[in-house]
Image: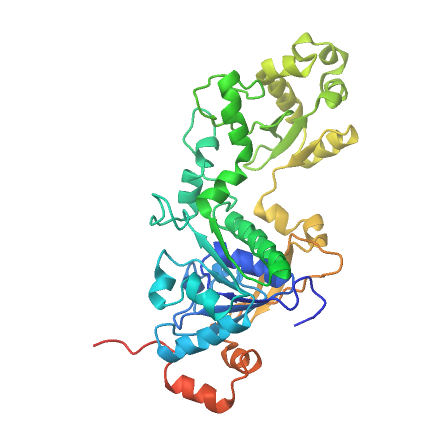
Length: 419
């Protein structure tokens, strides 16, 4: 493990599974933390979900678990609990996203963990938090989007609520959790004490749709002029592709008219004259329907129609080039294929090729956080239990006899099936 990374020297005991927690620990692994992924002998469930290569870990697993080492421990086994206790003693952070009460039943709730290691930061992801009327409810990505306000504000005004393709419930919560963990580690530098950090998926989705809370309160004082629809009840409506900000914006269809042949255009006040002149010449510049932002808001349906008529002669890339010349903010709607082959994405190292002993070549997303003195080296996800003996030896200092004794006692293996 390189010692010149931002999080070098920080050891994380990662008991999280599926997406939210692994997103968080992978980012910290990218930044240099030693992430020990502790799995049951059955392994993270996502290893076998949506498998595209028979017998190999799925992309669901590999894309969320790079830069980690894997150890299997049977936490229902007394010797397994001894190993776990020793790991807690040596780690700076312990992460978990089990259902409410699971760790308590195993004998490792926050009070016990804090007693074992007063300096440890214990970080939990819950669907709805550890207290409150919803605390015991199960949460998934789309449930969190539904209950956190995202779905009610996504989609078109006259259509059903829509889930966003961005995983704001899972990955969004993982990023929030990382911020909490790093804050707790900084506070530990001053106090010498660890603490409990919790992020609820519902809370984090609410935070990510914060501008909709801005609009919720503005509705009390009158309509929202930037919305293309002007029919309001007492909650923030769905607004399609409206920009949602002080400037007007929308996705404009370009040729040849395929699913993603759109350019998103933001019409700022100070670029209107140049844009109008390029689209419709002097006549459009002087058109009173669009003379200022208030007029354009009132007549935005007509404005977007004019821009779409103009766009019909160009591909999204051609139109982007035309508008960039006159400083109009815009961007093509980019598909996953567009991004996978994009030179800018390659330059930013955001889609990188890795090699896996079971599945061969595959691509992982890079680290979106760029630190000048902490270059990121991405390593493949671990096989189940791949580093068990290495961690027992290097981290815990166990000798061969001790490891053999623990293996014999079933500390790392599935319990025998009951007959």
